[in-house]
Image (cartoon, rainbow, N blue to C red; front, side):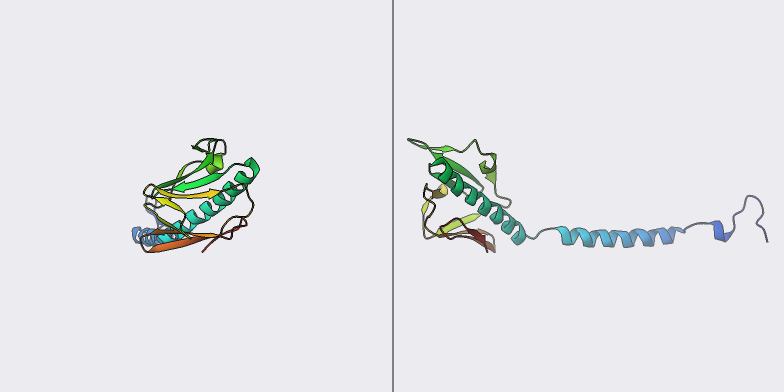
Length: 161
């Protein structure tokens, strides 16, 4: 039987509003699940920051040996930067873009180092000398209840735990 002109049969009607709403709800749930899993936890962000700092500390150590001048890592609760020792004073290291001043991903960050090094109210300073061997240390970074450690073995290896 043929439909009369101007009328459509049920087979030609397309999707109903209810069917479209069900598809949109399912797509929304799937998108929400994917985006929730893609977000990093605060511990993961702190660990990522620590891994970046470990690589930069290794670069600063190598730079001190190549330049034959001490280079320091200096940090407070919000940011960190690298300094080079000139004849009379410490100056910001400006000619190596990788060692520029940066903010911590999450702040304020509580920093401690053991064995205790040059720490004052302004922050913390780790100095890399011209020698390829230095004293081992552990740099602790914590934000709230999350804590990570950067272990330096004194011969250029930095491990994030």
